Amino acid sequence: MRNMMKMFIAGLALLLVGVAVHAQEVSKEQIKGLDEQVQEIKSDVLGIAAELSRLEEKLLYPSNTQIAAFVSLASGETFRLDSVELQLGGKPVAQHLYTAKELEALQKGGVQRIYTGNVRTGQHDLQVTVIGKAGGSDFQTTEHFTVAKDVGPKIVEISLAHQTIILKEW
Image 1 (spheres, rainbow, N blue to C red):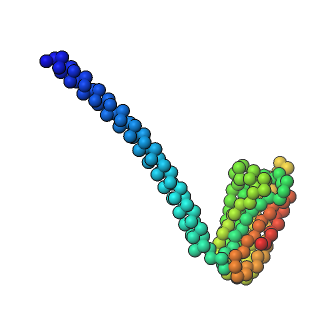
Image 2 (tube, rainbow, N blue to C red):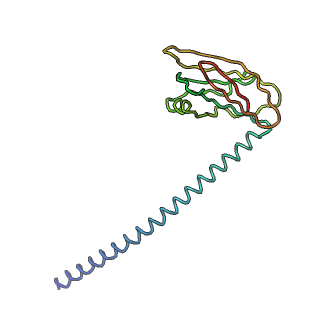
Image 3 (tube, rainbow, N blue to C red):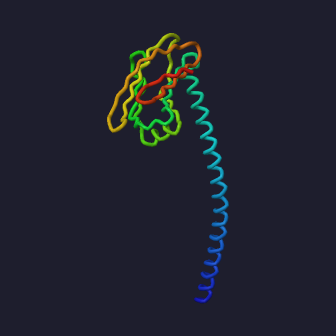
């Protein structure tokens, strides 16, 4: 009787091991399939998020009232840019503190969008304040510009060169 019980238990153990091995094989295949589905869903979600972002920008900033400001450094500039602040119509609209990586990107020719907003057509006062360090000493420069906004989007580039601020309108 004991031998039969041992044989029964041994057989049952072998059967369970076989089922477990088969279950692991199925699970690996299922996991692969699930992983592929998850990757597809992630891709779809990222696509939807990008489309929503574009739609949101069109809704919040219609092209007939939109103004966008970008910051760039002139070629070969080596001063350390700490911050840029924008005032439009006497009201602060944007301020950015630059990290070492952001400064490096600007020095390599990158451009940063610092502000996007809505304004009426007409003349607008734009004040740009730049804080940085050049030649071992700190500096702060402020310039005033008049931006003419027509019907349609307006793009301005704030180019920084030799501690001076140059405004380019597009």
